[in-house]
Image (cartoon, rainbow, N blue to C red; front, side, top):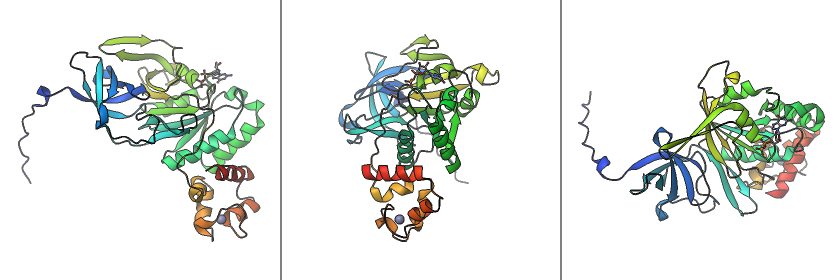
Length: 330
Ligand code: GDP
Ligand code: ZN
């Protein structure tokens, strides 16, 4: 067996206070970073030392792991010097800013939140999100909140059953009645999860129902936030202690959640027409079998495998319509 070499003496403490932390919130050049023991620092990007993608509207998202140096004169301020490789990220195209907007990074669960009513059920928001998440290599969970309204929307019932039958994960909850919340709490336990959806679908309400008390530490001070305090416009990560009524009475069960800004319309990015079908669960195997290969638009060619499947009722006309809509957009 090879002998282990003696550890080299470490003089690191004498240099600078470089640490690793997690981005909690922030947009262009000012970020809240959580370091060891949950301490928060207000951090800026250090010059050009961070080589980040210029296509993005925001260089860092909640969940990003960064290296940072604490200011010599102000222990609550820091400079971010490096971004650590991402396990994954959730992003969408921001039409207003004409750039890709990072919503979250290094997540374990991505919830696409929808409602049967108030706001109206928007199947194409979820459809586009499903395609974009597949492109990003993220496996989403469709979360239908306001389940107390499900009887009011036959359209929602139809689509949610369709997605479930296709093999997408669908969960039903009501922040109002508490239905399904214990199951949701189970999925969130010890994980980092992100909620994506239009504003008004109840993202903040869900976090408030899940949360017992949320503790955010600022610098060396600790501030307690009670229930009902989560309202996000910019997107931020919160650490929550799950309500014991949702954990079978077990106290102290933790979860981390990123609440993203409400998204009105989900615009696709980085997807070529030729690959679009491969991002639909049921169209992907058909596309690879289609005799016309990648040159097929799968919209009008006689003998196309996808068109045949639509004709034989093997592919839902709802999904084929979605495909055609998105093909016209990308
Ligand atoms: P956000 O914009 O996604 O954060 O949505 P909010 O959490 O602010 O919720 C928008 C509205 O929907 C509020 O008036 C909530 O009280 C209401 N709401 C949230 N969840 C439910 C639910 O499960 N059922 C019903 N009926 N209303 C809900
Ligand atoms: Zn085809």
